[in-house]
Amino acid sequence: MIKHLAVFLGSRDGNDPALSTSAYEVGKGLAERGIELVYGAGGGGLMGQISQGAIDGNGKIFGVIPRFMVEREWGRVEGAPGMQTLVVDTMHERKALMAERAEAFLALPGGIGTLEELFEVWTWQTLSLHGKPVGLLNINGFWDPLVEMMERIAAAGFLHGSPAESLVVGDDLDDVLARLDAAR
Image (cartoon, rainbow, N blue to C red; front, side):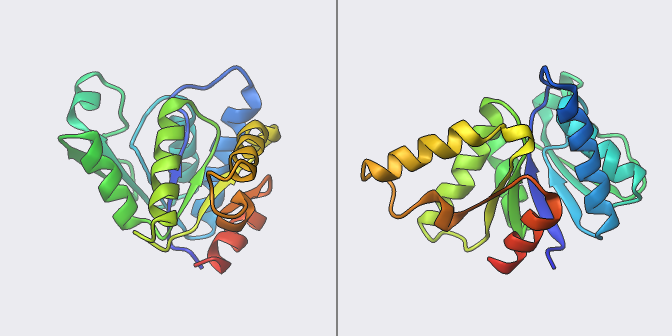
């Protein structure tokens, strides 16, 4: 089973309260399964919810945050039981450390930063820079338009094969975790 999962998700709550609840439950669910949450160490939005769920579930958390975000008080840097936070100088360092630590990647709903992180690790996977699986937790169909767009990109000849061949997509945490683990 996966022991270290990098999760990309929003630093804001978004407009749907169900997303905050789901992020919290994912954090708690990872803790219950003994899976360390590897994330960007944000203290607000869905990032704050997932980390709080992991904390409340007595889980392990590995957070990486750039110094400028700490200075703006955007991070969860104060030590909670089971939490390790690294403060780095750049976003590039943040993403590299998260990618190194993780055995798989999972995106929950989020904005442009979430998309950027998702596409970077997915691109690295397609270039064989790593063999770690990448997935989407499709809460309330949030990722449906992206999956549809990626299918259009593949149909237009700009993506080898179907996104379904290289991306795990599902709306159930147990199912997604099992498929990410099987893809390792």
